[in-house]
Length: 386
Image (cartoon, rainbow, N blue to C red; front, side):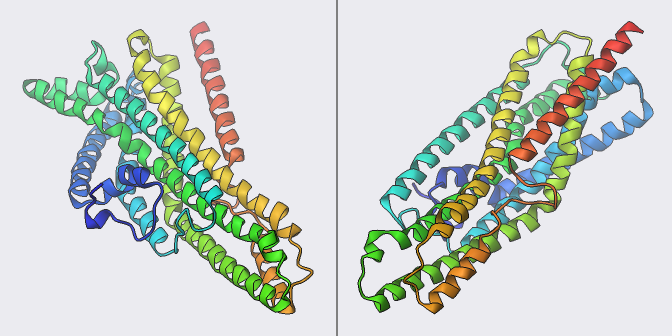
């Protein structure tokens, strides 16, 4: 496959399909310009809607338009962050000496290829479902103006341009689902790249107990080989941790913004579904094509973050602590202590003292969502009774 020179990374990338779709495309100057135009348009639209919200602050008005209003902020953050996150990830990986997947053993290479095949399948299925949802949103329904404030605003204030402007607005739904999910696809890409490097590092440590090395009778030659492996593993482990720390520091503010705006969007969407007085029957397909890909992306982000933590836990508990170091000389034992001290704590995608990308975070989000649904449902029932 021909790729322009600006798309070729300086490392052997087994996840090239993931990278091209979710990172390289958004690093090109034409796409960046288009994103800037789209960003300015959505910001202007959101400002106008905010002004009118302040003038018409009624409960029915808020119920109808709040979900799409909060979605606008999520879209703005997604469009703004995607090129910057993509640049940061590629630059970090290019400077971190990424090993090719065939650097250690055939077994590890096949394992990584199998995981990449699954991830590519997930990416294609998720994007196809998101684009299907986008196409469904471009098909007009009778009461769309009761949900999409922009359509209502165009029909009320610019009726002579209604057909053209509504067509342009609906056309944006073809790309917005991809834009909203891309920062999270990049997070999955980053987690997988880190995990694949740890797979190979783990194999390097395991090789210290393999018969190929332990059967060497010459102690000097044996210790020389052990030293090479330990030094190489310390250097590699240091690069992985340094790369992860840099990426986390670069992403912290985006994580905070996505957390706040995402929580507001979930609350408003649930509130809309519970309180909407119109018919949702013809919108089930839209909701399905919106929620299923979102759920898949959420699950894969959480699972891949947990897998990074699990593999580093296994490296320390099952591999490093069980190495037979009885034949090692004093220098190698010191290097071994450095390796142990560097890996006592599992590698986590930790964005604050209490927030890491793992099952605990995913469970906390699900519990919070359930609590919000229960509260809003209770308030809705109580309001109906009154």
